[in-house]
Image 1 (cartoon, rainbow, N blue to C red):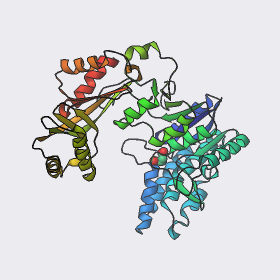
Image 2 (image 1 turned 180 degrees about the vertical axis):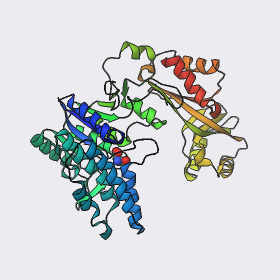
Image 3 (image 1 turned 30 degrees about the vertical axis):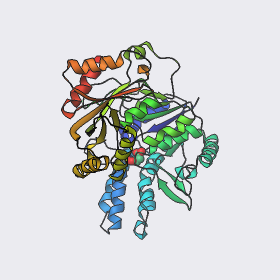
Image 4 (image 1 turned 135 degrees about the horizontal axis):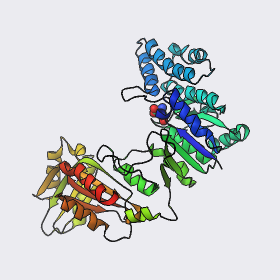
Length: 440
Ligand code: ASP
């Protein structure tokens, strides 16, 4: 059995976090491939090492002295080296990285050094082999990942060394150039490593005990989700729940490798498992119906009225053409006999709502187009909802009993998400009462 473990920046922010990681890795002999981020924040106002490295590059670019930023970075690593009693020669490493930096450097190279150094430290601490990402994480000319080449290279290295620590976030592009993923990209490296090695599980260690059913800023102490499918996760993330880097899913999903989100600070918590589907559902999951509740604020509803609309299709086409030319995204659409409504993000029409509405009136030859602002969408997501009766009834009854007016309703045809539009002042309360009625 092989477990690929990725530890995020908050799991590696200082020596005491390093010690937790060591304990986790050593607790399970299957944890033989470790991917690390750069040191993250130790406290809320702290700065991530990656941000300091980008700051260094900005100083260089504008020829502003940056020695104090380098000192800050060095102090972060020195503290870990001291606390974990490591023997790595940090002076030599910093000389290598920053010695010639004034002659010119690329932002990707500098940014990658956060993960590079952390992986070196962690490899020594665990007694694993340090393997640089440049030896196996390959990009193509077009900037996409070269999965075939990457897989062959990592398998070979892993077969030789058996226990490996490698940096996340970057790889090597043609021309021997270091290239980084977008921010948070160590998640992707971990997923690619897990897929390349056909791991049994991809453990993504972070600072929460899995994906929570609902935003903890809205509901106090919500339960974590034990198991979620990729389809549910897409609905939850699209509507605002942020969990993994978006591109993480693809490599592990393709090979049906389960992803387990775990908490470095509470390693005995089981966290959340993400999979394509689950063969059996637990009694608790069956009884609960829903997996999570999320939502987004700041939408507007544009309602287009026309008695005896002759052809709704041509009217819709005209309205969508106008949306396209005004770059207005349509979130949902609902239909009545003599009217239809579009729900659009307010920011996409802000400042141009009057021109937009006038254009609709002019092109569709109608008078009655109304705009309602201050709408928020709440999404109730759950694979258990599909083909089950009574769920929407419960949602509407709960909101109704709490005097929350529903402005729009939408259910996807796979029945795993029901979305309601409410006035923004009811948003938090709506999420709270729905959570109380389904999850508590
Ligand atoms: N260190 C990088 C960042 O801060 C990548 C990562 O942590 O995944 O975005």
